[in-house]
Image (cartoon, rainbow, N blue to C red; front, side, top):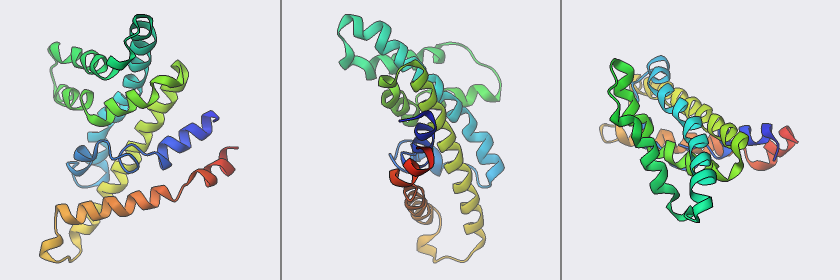
Length: 184
């Protein structure tokens, strides 16, 4: 698959949140409105390419020579947890632990480890862009739905889950056939 095809696939069809259901918890916990959601999800989106490249490095340079590829998940968790030992100050420091040990970040690292160094970076960046796109659109829809009438039993989490499900169907409309026609 070409680089453009990989980017389109991991941004739309294999979207980390809507297509693979990794990182749904942070998506549902985002603040309402596109701008606050963008600021809140930037740390997670920036951690995905770093996780993808780190996973490739750990797998290729550490685990493969020792024949320990089956320990990739444990090794990636340990490597991503190392920055938690460093003292971090400021508001950005509060987002660091959540972004690094998020299931979406770990999932992207594991999914992209076999793609090579450049491929892992492309997959991680595309997955981060897909997460940002889904988070901003979801937050905007949720903000708008809060102003509309809904039955009491559907307000809050049920309506958010329904919205996420419908968004997943929209993102899956960009199937591989359409993307193959676009990307070649």
